[in-house]
Amino acid sequence: MAEVELVVDCRNTLGEGAVWNDADRHLWWTDIEGRVLWTYEPESGRCASGQTAERVGCFAPRRNGQGFVVAFSSGFALYDPATGWRQDIVAFEPDQPDTRLNDGRTDRQGRLIAGGFDEKGGGRLISSVVRLDPDLTATTLFSEVGCANGICFSPEGQTLYFADSMRAEIWAFGYDPETGGLGERRVVATIKGNRPGIPDGSCIDAEGCIWNAEWDGGAIVRWTPDGRIDRVVELPVPRPTCVTFGGSDYSTLYITTARAGLSEAQLAKAPLSGGLFALRPGVKGVADSPFAG
Image (cartoon, rainbow, N blue to C red):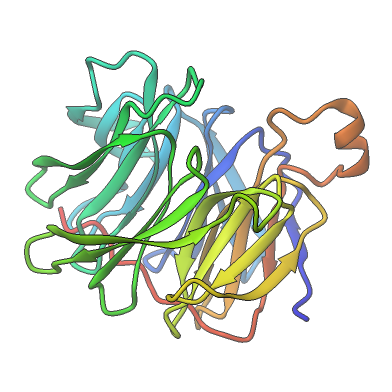
């Protein structure tokens, strides 16, 4: 069994959006509710953080410019954390005051796919998933979303995986790499009744399996593309949030976690909640493409 290691005791309120940046050889992630971007360099062990004016749900390095494309809570923007420069692109669901952007990841061609979250809760399926193209045009891919999570792509890029945490299901869509259009949808896994938690962020390994962070399940679960549980890695915290492969050979799985919503008694039992963890699971990941805009 792979050993889970705490690499940064950052105590994030809601760590999320982990992404490996090949350009600087750093892992980046966001504490959404803390309004902080974090970065960690494995070779030196150094980490740093910086405040953002707005909550960041997810982001990706840019291929043709400085900084990142960012899914801020209110909409998409180009943003350079080194200088604070920001260029807004498009607002997200301006007619839905209770939603914000949440999880996302780039496809193999460098488009950003990101979805929303109904912050008011109550089981409402009122948000959506949007594709942001390199020319900075935005297209809604599908709606009736409660809490978008688990967005990732198969190694060849022809399947889009998605988890609606509110439904507690992981879906797979056929995906056209040329156009960014969606095909048929199938249910990969129904978590409710089969696992103790709900699905949060996901990534793909080189064998095509899905690694999913299970919120309130205290574990990372590896699902096969046909919906079988292949492996469960238990964590010392109850609320893992996002996973991504990184490091020089993409053999390290990084895991963000959260303290949000935990009582003092729960935090006393799991004091490392909100930390950044890592493990070497014996399988390599697939590099995410930089945003092509």
